[in-house]
Image 1 (cartoon, one colour):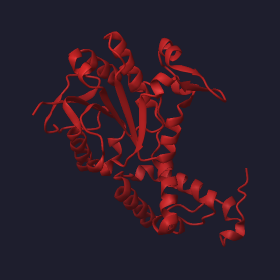
Image 2 (cartoon, helix red, strand yellow):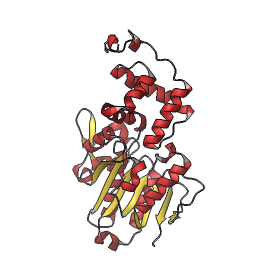
Image 3 (cartoon, helix red, strand yellow):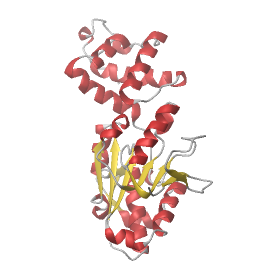
Image 4 (cartoon, helix red, strand yellow):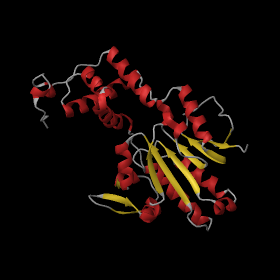
Length: 296
């Protein structure tokens, strides 16, 4: 479909129907630095084509004819703040689905089922999904927790918080509507129990699960100001791979500070290697990466 942008608004008639020139090294370095400064994420040269593709799509949408002009638009003034929020959503939202890492969720289930029941009677179970994207992960955690509480014959006293840098992703998560492909590979009994038909060929999370999950916008560079404290479980998968090694360690330290004594931190396999976070004890597992916070 042809771009309907008025060519005269760009000063380059017909540019929107032409392929943008390749981004040069200076421009790429400039965008790399901006992304790392504002989000902590690093963009390797292997992902240069990913950056070019996403920038060019957005530039065509608003009628911007060069990478440099668009960069200046993003970094200057109040309009730049709004445009940056739109762009960062394009660059950070990742494809996900329910029960994406079965072994990690099984570890969560085993952890809950082996805790003394008295712990759950004293205070609600608090779980945090960091980098939750469009909500599949926190809703999956809520299903796991609900199944565990049922098995333990306890009331469903738990809450899940999902946080992400992308406001559009969080708005999608709050709606609780998903395409059927997001449920691929999921147990049929769980599908039947926790979803119902939604509008326009979607499926909808049942209220008893959706009401247990809340969402908050949060940049992981600002964890020191995060209001979450005393969490029983922190789930942070497929996020740290985008950061430099030193920043991964800094993020994990901050997350560990927000765990309750005896709480569990779950990361993605291979996201943190050759380092033992202080105050945490590795959970023996060949298929998942997790630590328990030792009591003070």
